[in-house]
Length: 445
Ligand code: ADP
Image 1: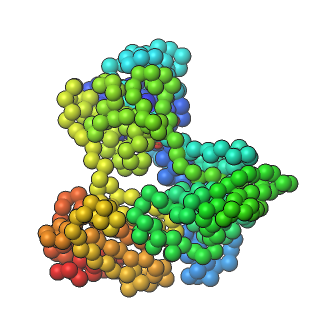
Image 2: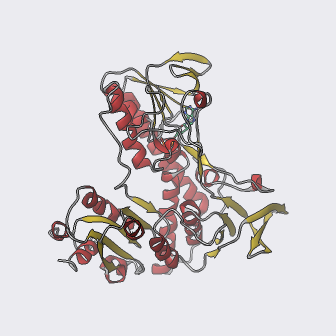
Image 3: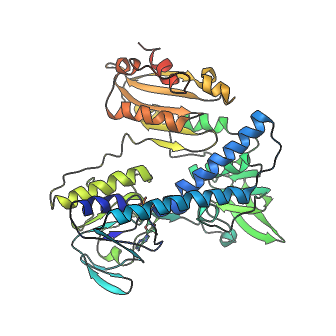
């Protein structure tokens, strides 16, 4: 039984059915793709791309047309629908998978309730993902979450003139840059003195410096209260000990995500203090026939890692009680899809210092890259980190245009343990941003 049909669910389901197993997959959405497709990566990045298009038109071609936000949302919905349909086709190919719309409740480690009926399973993969968390403050229920902004066929179709975003993580910053690019006035209220706390502070600092100064970022500004005044919302927050106020058309809370553990499962398997399902690197929970993959296990909350975990769980089910596949969450590329974006992979400066690994770094400023010049988006850099003695590639960051593409090539190099010399042998195609990799490496060779 596969619980949840997102990235942590369906790839494993397909693999198990290809191996001849009988698979029941359950999800209340009645579609494959999980939150990533329904309200996460796909819809938010569609809006990102369209917002960037609008912003580029304005900057480079002097377009003065206001954005048609409803049209942008329609386009987003149509991309989502295209992918739902694509997944439905995949289901028809995998005849061994029965897909049921519903929510799974666990009775014990071999029995569950699905659509009001009791089902028995030999193995289960729990891939129930996560949901936006909502902090507690008066008026929190008046605020939107990323689900409201990006869900399939959302009713959020009017571009806000003024927006307050609560939070300092990647969702807060991404959303801020999308709506800023579309012309909204955006304020971000960060509780502490730093945003993007989960990434290398030097990389975070570089990205924050590149963001449009029109975005009003306020640090040490915990939210106190939100209230509705007429058609608008009044946001009361603390600011260096004093109280301050902002007025906006919408208030968005982007303060992290909470794992979703199916009902009854907490009695069956071990859950960590932070609410994640505890797993080994083979994705096995404390009950050896139950696996947990994707966001719900808290190891690395990305679609691309959920897929790897899902396949690993399937492989381990196929090999019975022997763990034949393990997941290594290092060497996973991560991108903050702000406009401009930032990406990293492997070990970067702060981790290398903490781990006392002797390293050497080389960089290239994207201002000298031809494609960055074509778009006149010349801020940012690529920075590569190598082990000092062997010049083996350990990690990288890219801040600026096309970082999400560049990081894929760099991931290949990190995962396969290439050296600077091997990397310098590649003729990076002209004129693409990948040339920056060659320019940086060749400073060492
Ligand atoms: P991941 O990428 O970690 O697999 P997603 O968040 O993309 O996760 O998808 C998780 C899916 O699990 C969502 O589509 C959600 O509807 C589904 N889900 C959540 N709780 C249950 C449950 N109790 N039974 C079945 N499916 C569930």
